[in-house]
Length: 83
Image (cartoon, rainbow, N blue to C red):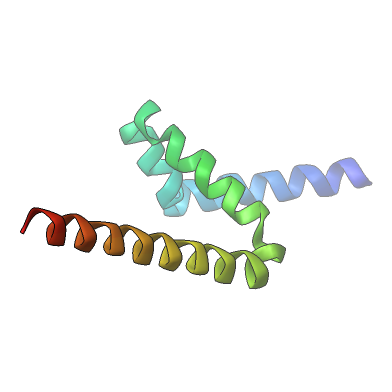
């Protein structure tokens, strides 16, 4: 009974793929191949961290902003020294 259900679901998926073609990401991977691998790995890991996004994204934004301010201050200090 369970095997019949699995077979039916697989047949429906195959029919949908034949009707609509492969999904866009799969099609893109087929065209691009290996160069897309790092992006795909990044996207999969990012999706796996989705429950952490409410804490992770603000943390990354804060780190980015503080690094930007620090680098900007360093550039301004170097510009004032050379002037």
